[in-house]
Length: 235
Ligand SMILES: [Zn+2]
Ligand SMILES: [Zn+2]
Image (tube, protein in one colour):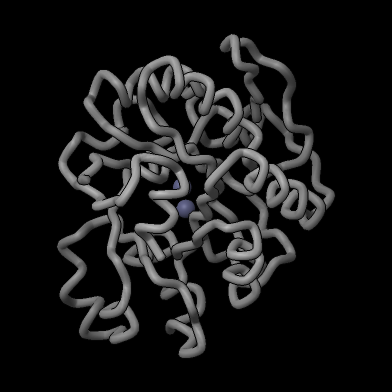
């Protein structure tokens, strides 16, 4: 079956995410727009996924628990998991690999964690937008060990992308999907990076504001309408 998707959305846990981006508001907006599946992917954290999954169950939107990791090379990659347990296990690993730098909310923005009743439960004390110690070439294995899938984020952007930061796609890469901000760049990028010919290409909003969440335009073909089915479709 085909699902309208947006698999890269930031909540108010990302310091750069708008404070209106509560998990319940994100899922509510996705429902209003007519999306079938979304992923909440905060910088280096999965800690708003539990609340997003709860809201998804209420609104009838499939929510895939995820994270946008910032690797040691400052490459952004979206990691998606079949369930909350796997996501939180990965969250623990990444959190332990963050530099011990406290967030300064007045400069970077607040990092709010919500409970399942749409109330602020706590604030994340460590700044989430820094690079963690995990390298890009190690990431695939760490995510696959937890039955998830990883794809490099916005590879057509000139900052924090695999191609901009490394200058090339490592030939021993194993990722099977890639995200473009603008699909018009696909032909050029495929010419320059033949590795992409074997990748499923997705385009997500990378929304930090509610109004930027994708319209129901792009579809992902899945075998089953579950988070595991979405992971599988990207492998
Ligand atoms: Zn990014
Ligand atoms: Zn992002």
